[in-house]
Length: 625
Image 1 (cartoon, rainbow, N blue to C red):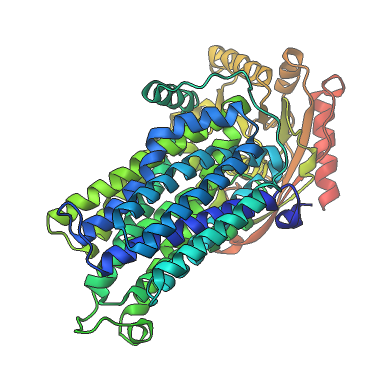
Image 2 (tube, rainbow, N blue to C red; image 1 turned 180 degrees about the vertical axis):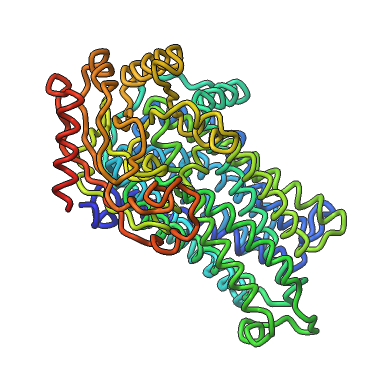
C-alpha cells in the first residue's frame, strides 16, 4: 500500500486533479506574462517589467481576500463536492480567457487571471485538508512530497506549454484550446475523488471577510509552532514568487536571452523543487523530519548568493536562444545555482506543510490551512509590491538575488531562534545520517498514541539525540538540571522541552518538580524517556538502575518500553577514552560507524521494577552481541 500511493484509489484522483489545475494556471499565467514582457504591453503607464510583477500579485490577491471563507466552506461542505465545484468553475473561467487570448484583450486576460486566483483560493484548503482524510499518517510525508512534486512538475509542463504556445504564430488560439482541454480533464478527474464526511455541517459562513480573516488567523496561532511554520511557508512563497517574477526580466536584461530561455529557467526551477521534494521524502523515512528545513534554508541562501556573484553574461545585439546561451562561458554556474536552490526549496517546504497538517486539530485543520493561504498571499502580494518598488528605484534583476540572500538569512535566524526544535532536528539529522548509520529495530513497539515511558541504557552524551531522531512521535527527555544551565546547550534543550531533574541530596525541590512534570506529561498522553542508570557508563557496562522509574509508575500506570543503544561505546561522545567529547583523536575512528537502537515490546506498569528492568535491558544487550 505504501509503495503504490500514486496508484491508490485513495490518492491518485486528488493528485491528478490538483496536477491539472496547477498546470492550467501556469499555462495561462506564463502565456500572459510572456505576452506582456515581449510585446512591451503597458497599461496605466506601468512599464512591462512592472506589469509582469503585477500579474503575480493579481493572481495571488484572492488568496488574501477570500481564504477565510474558503476555509469555512471546506469545513461546512463535503470536500469531494468542493473539488468538483472548483474544477467546473475553472472550466468556465478559461472559456472566458480563450476570448481574451484569441482577440488579444490584455485587460480581460488580467481579469481572468484574478478569477483563476479566486478558483485556486477555494481549492487550496481542500487540497491540503483532504490529504490526512485520504491517507494514513505514515503516508502523509510521502503524500505531501508527491503533491509538491506534482505541483512543480505541473508548473514545469504549464510553463513550457504556455511559453511555447504563445510564442507560435497562432499562439492565442493554441493557448485557448490547451486551457479548455486541461480544464475538462480536471472536471472528469474531480468526480473520481473519494467521498469524505463533512467536518462540521452546522458551521455558519461568516461573510464579513475582515472579521472571519482575523478569526482564522487567531485559530492558526493557537499552536505557536504551527503559526511560525505558516510564516516559514509564507516566506518560501515570497522568495519563490520573487524569483519567478524576476526570471523574465533577468533573462532579458542580464542573460540577453529569448523567451525560450525564460521557459528553460522556469523549467529547471520546477524540476529542482520536484527532485527536492522526492529526496526529502526518501530522507524522512515515513516520518516528519524537521531537520531538513534548516538544510533547505541554508541551501537557499548559499545558492541565491552565488547567483548574485555569477552576475550577468556578455551583452549581445540579438537575443540568445537556448543553444546559443549554453555556449556562453559562465552559464552552467548560473544553471547549477538555480537547480541547487530549487532542490533546497523542496527540502524546506515539504516538512513544513506536513508539520501544520499533523500539529493542527482535525476540527481546525481546514481553517489553519486557509490561514496559511492568507498569510502566503499577503507575502506574495508584498513580493509583487516590493519588486515594483525596487524596479522603480533602478535596481537590476541580478541585484534582487543579493536582497533575497540577506532577507532569507534573517528569516532563517528568526525561525530557528523562536522554534529551537528545527535546529535540534537538524543536529539529530546530521548525527544519524552523516556521522553515524543508525538502524532502528522494533519501531512498531512504540505506541502509536497514548502515554508511555521509554527507558534506555546510557552510553554517551548523544544517546537522547539518537532516540529523538529515531522515534516518529515527539519524546520528552528527563535530564540532569546542570545541562539546562549551559548557555549554548540550554537553547536546544528548551526546544526539546527537556524535563530537568536533580538528586535528592542535590536539590529536592527540582527533583519533586521533575516528577510532577513527568506525571503531567504522561497525563497529557505524551512519551517520556529516561535513562534509569542516571549517568553515562565509564566502562561500557550497564550501571545499576535507580528507583526513579518505580516512583514514576506509582504516579502514572503507563506501559514501559525498553530500548538499548549499541555502537556508541568508544565514540567521541562516550567515556571510553576519558572525559567525553574532549579527545579529538577519536573522531576519525568512529565516523559513519553503525549504531543500533533496539526497541522491545512494552511491559505493563504492574510488572516493572528497577531491578527487573535492569536485568531485561542487560539481556537485550547480550542478545545484540
